[in-house]
Picture 1 (cartoon, each protein chain N blue to C red):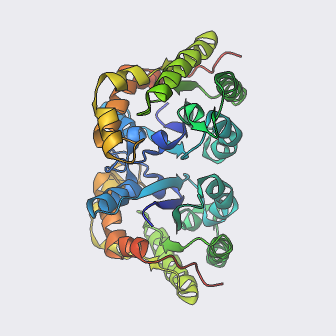
Picture 2: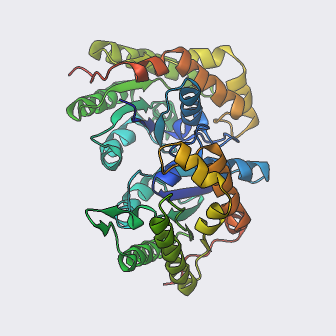
Length: 206
Length: 206
């Protein structure tokens, strides 16, 4: 099917906060898809500060007007970074609840007949938060593996380059600039995002 | 206030359908704002096929999770192109209903304390649709003038260049490629979009 529509749900890293090019990783993936001769349209549905639980509450309401029976619609969930931040002495969302929220969204995608994939949380500058993001990413990988849903971790790759953290530190302390988003998009593309988009639609197993 | 967040509601032309750069006019405006030294984040809330009436139904629900008390949040409505298309022998939305939908959204923005601006519909390849878009644009201008809301018409400028129609004809018949979106963004910027973003917040008059 030619009419491919990707719904990207998540947080500020999906929204592309800090990117001076106005695209974030979502726009870069769209550009890469066009360049590969497979035009793609994407709905960027990232909202700043949202945790996995908040995205789980919202996503179906926003997906509804964007789903079109005549198109090949797919969804990516990229959540978790805000779950791992500390507020009032505790993390905003505990890992078990983050995994429940992700599992719930994948259930709901199945119910809607929507092929789904998951991207892991990028790292923060704070080292304790980094460790929590990497641990949460590993837990998300297990949730996805159990359902045969593609999962693309990004935290370790982004930490291995200095671009992400250096740009975040030079910016608002959390969000990178164009180089970081280039790297994040490249990590997802290297992980097989376009291959997944080109593969026949398979909805996540229940 | 430094934390400027722009919510852009509309249709496929807001979503940037057909743009091989993955940005549409919204991403180009974000880039121009960064280049002008005034970082901006934007939420792209365009949905394909939606008329003014459909956007009016949806917009507040999607605005809510994106409004943040500590930020300077503003909204642009860019609707009307789908209103003027013919389905089953009649236009999808009559001009009086389009104007009522726009007026209603501006009322609701006022109630939320959100500064608002409006962009007119771009032209279609079909000449009768073009005429309807230009007429609707003039009606929207009156709605906005009565409320002292900025209005940026785009149809006549896009028709004056051949880029928009040539790219649409070479594409899916409705949506331009990168050149058309460049021109649309430029038209909005020339109309004063960044000046409006830099001006103190004024909510639309009731």
